[in-house]
Image 1 (cartoon, rainbow, N blue to C red):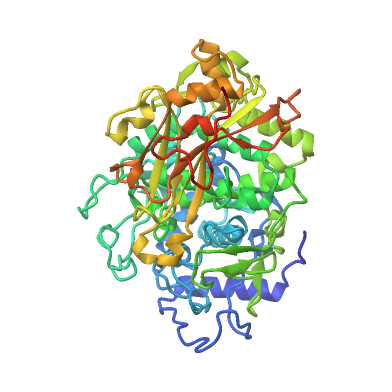
Image 2: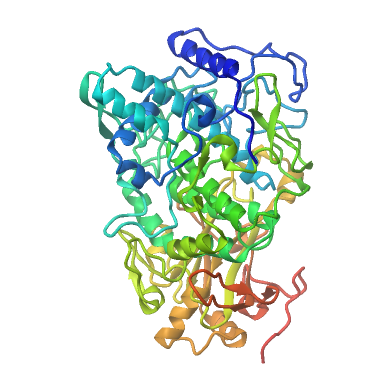
Length: 632
C-alpha cells in the first residue's frame, strides 16, 4: 500500500520545527493543548507527524540492515553513531527527544503529542497481549527512525564542504535504523550479542577529527534522572543509566554484565532459531502469531523471551522501562522484520477484531481492536489523524524494507528463510550437512550446550512444549525452562548451560500491583519451547527409538522436566506459579522436499496428555484439559 508524497510545505514545517527544538532550550509543555478533550479528538493543532525517512529527503525505499552488516559500511556506521549520540543528548523536555520517545512505551505514563489518557486507561501506550502488538510497534519504530535520520542530517551538515562531507551525505541517503538478528547463527567465533553493543566507548570521525565518545549502543544515560518519572521505584529511581543483568539491584553504581547476557543468548539461540522457523514456516493465521494469548507460539512470545534474556533484572526485562535501553530498538526492528517476512508469506491474513483484556494509556481493559483502531499516540499528519493497522500494513509506506524482501517471490523468500533459520541454516556460503545440523550437541559461542536449531522433521512428527501461565502472577517478568534428562539444581544461572537444557520461554511482565484483580484473573498467556530438534537428536544418539507419538510420550513421561525462575534468578516452585500448566502439543508433518519449500502440518495439533499428565504443573485429571490415556 503506497501513500502520496508528503507535501513540500509539511516537509519544510517539520524540518523547521526539528531544528528549532535542537537550538532552543525552552521546555516543551502541552499539558493545556487539549484540556478536557478526548484523547482521540482531531483538532487542527501542532501535532507531530510520523512520516518516515523517505518523506524527509531520504531515498525512496531502502533496507534496514542487520547491525553487523551496517558496521561493515564505515561511512554509514559513523553517521549512525553520531546521529544516535545526538539523539540521546537532546533535552529530555523535548517531545522529540530519545527520552520522551522511549517513554511512550511505559514510564513516565504521561501524555505524548497531546494524546491524553483515556478513562480507564493505565500504563504506557504500548499494546502487549494484543492483536495489534505488531502493528502498533511499526509506527513507533518509524518515529524513532525518523528522529534518528534528522539527527543524522544535522550531524552531516556540521561537516565542512569537501570529500568527507560528500561521502557522509551519500551514506545518509539510504541510512535506516539497523536490526539485531538474535535468531540467526552468528559469524564464526562470535556471540549472538554483537560486540558493538557491549563496548563502553567508540571512536568516531567528527568535524573536529577522530575522537572517542561514550558508546550510544551500550546504554542510555539519563540527564537528569527523574525519580518521579521512574515511579519513585527502586532501583529504577537510582540507576543513572540503563543496565543489562545489573551487578546489583540496590546500588546506584551497578554495572551491566554483558558477558553473562551473551552466555544466556548463546545457550538459547538454537531453540529461538527453531521458534522463529516454526512461526514463519508453519503458522498462517495472523491472530495466532501476533500475540501470546493464543495457544502455541507467537512473534510476541519469542519477543518476550529476548527481553528477559537481555534485561535479566535490568531495564529490558520490565515493560515500563525497556525502551530506554538502546538495544530495545534493535530488538524491535528485528521483530518488525519477522512480522514483515511473515506478511510476505501470508499476504491474505491480517488484523481481525479481537477483545484485548489489558489496558493501555488510551485503551481501557476489554477494548476490541480491529484494523481501523487508532495506533495511539502516532499521528499521520499535523492535523491529528492517527495511523491504523490498515494504514501501516506495508513497510514501503514509510520508506524502508528488509534485505530478505528485496526482489523476492514466495519461493525465493522461502529459500532465504530456510537458509537463515531452517535445518541447514548457515552463517556463510558453505552449508552444513544434516548430521552437523541435527546429530550433535554443539557448543554455542560462550554459552553452554544445546541442541541444534530447526528440525528436519525426518520423523514426520512435530512436538512443542506449550506453557500457559498468568502474566502478572509473579510480580514481574520470569522464565520457564525446559529440559530433557537430568533436572538441575536451584541455581538458575547454570540452567541454560546444562546438557539437558532444551530452551526457555520468557514472560515479559510488570508489577502485579499495577493490575486490577479482574485483569490478573484473565491474564493467561502462552509460550512455547519446540522439542522436535532435541528429540531428533535423541533418535540419532540411540536414546530414543522413534518419533511416533506413543514412543515419544513414554520418553517424555520420564525425561521431560521444567523449572521456573524470576529474571533476578530466584527459583520459583511450579506449585507457587499462578495458573501454570505445561502440556505437549504434537502434529503430523510433511517434511520439505526442496529448499524452496517449507514443511507442512498435515493434521491439527493434538495434546499429548501422557507426556505431562498427573505431574506438578502438568495436565491434571478433571481439569479443563481432561487427562486420558492415549497410548497403551
